[in-house]
Length: 249
Ligand SMILES: [Fe+2]
Image 1: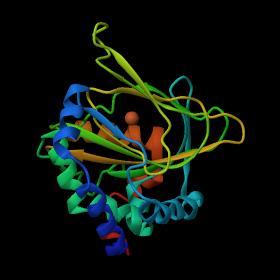
Image 2: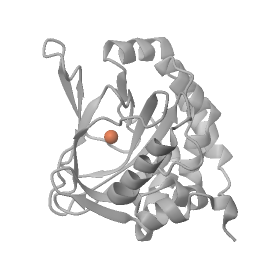
Image 3: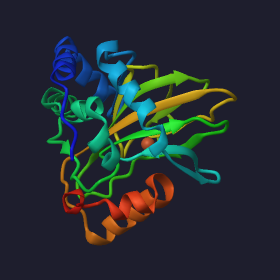
Image 4: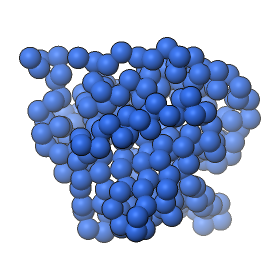
């Protein structure tokens, strides 16, 4: 049963976004090759209920390790959809979707219900947990935009973002501590990014939200995408057994 949303959190999200000068935000986003970030954008009234959901979902974390590429844990949209009302309130927020569309200048929308990445938590909890440099490559026919929100940051781990990766003259690197409420928005096909390794007795948890301009996907790409999600992120049981929640009894 999908979780109910939280109107007070939705109101606070809308209030926060209304306080931004979107013209300046959009200009910065374009000047940085489709990448922008805000330190501690969301107040505690929005973030605290999400941090509580991070705590509640620890038992649902699926851990993965691919040498040289990534090590960490994650909780998929399928689980959050049922058990994380504050996080779902952000993902389903009309004001937030308008914000994404305005900043990107693209007719972006939420991902289809059968995408476990739509909205997911990423747990870095063991020494060495990390994610190597990558693009958030779109398997969809259209563009894919990623929003990353910091929720727990008790670590030396950093989000490193490189714009203009293939143009040395314009290449620029940003190193970001994703503190609670910090928000990063980028085009997944253009921003080269990584998470540096976690140290001893540290913890970092972030939320990502995905938006696409065309939810269509070739069946072969859907298969590749599901295999990647099963192996690298959420586990086979989550990706393949729970793709059609409306059919569960
Ligand atoms: Fe990524």
